[in-house]
Length: 451
Image (cartoon, rainbow, N blue to C red; front, side, top):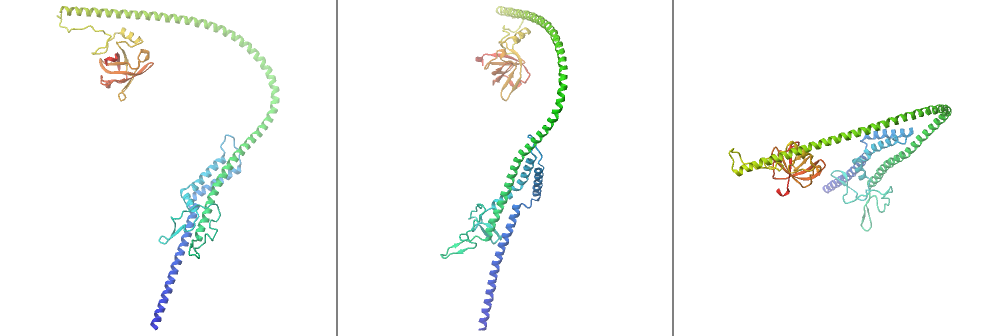
């Protein structure tokens, strides 16, 4: 019996120890939850307050004081002058935005201004922290009313009804989180409202300062006009006397000006006669130059005709010798060639007289015309020549370019303007790579069917 009693006492003692351990563990878990809740609320509050940004809050405080000082000074501002109060308000808003538009602040504000209802947070015994329940979607509070005021619908603890169903409660911790979030939201709204009110004050203050500026200017102008009015009365009398004297002097000056005008008219007529005489002499000089030029051209034409006749005679003599079989000199047979046609051995050779005629002609003849390369682009196959529509060059015409008695390139005109033309370099002909800007070339026209 004593052994049984001893065993019962041991079991009773162990039961009491186990019950105490369970109670202690529940108390420890409850204490951990409460402490974790308090720690999180405090940390969230300091995040919302941005207490670590001491320098930014100090800057905001200084700019608020500066804004108040400018507002109290109420100095007039001109219509086109910058309003110092607007500058101070903009600077203050920028300083506040460093806090209010900080991502850390914005994310914390969005996360904390919520209604923490039934099962909104779950306790994690391993990390000993409250965590959001992913199965519950939180929503921000609508206004400042208590969303859990109806305790029958939202009791503070779980309530088991007679039918066995359980109404889940909203703990006091969740309710406190919700109302603190409302304070956070209200604080943020107050900042925005204060910024908006400052902007309204600046707009109204701007008009007020402008009116003050205009009023002070008008008052100052009125005083100046009153002073000037007295001075003007005295000055008018003096001016009347001066005006009379001035009229007499102007009359004398007008008479002198009329005399001077008559003299200038006479000089102008004389200069006009001299101009007419000079123009006549100039025209006579131009006519004389044109006559001399025509005589020179006529002489050059005679030289050309003479050279043609001599060439014809030489060709006839050669042909006569060939017919008679006279080749005693051992010279190679020669064939009379028109010097104005293109040659495969080199560009047409022109005399000075022929060069002058070719330069003055309105179109490019069969003998071609000397020119220079303006620009050339081997990549695009384009070339620019300083001859244009004034020489009869038209789009689509084909020319051969000779350089140092060699065929350098064959071109087709792409566009023509006054003084220059742009052409394509036709492929598989000559050596266009040898052409450079500034090179002297001989431009000879070609018939389309010969290509």
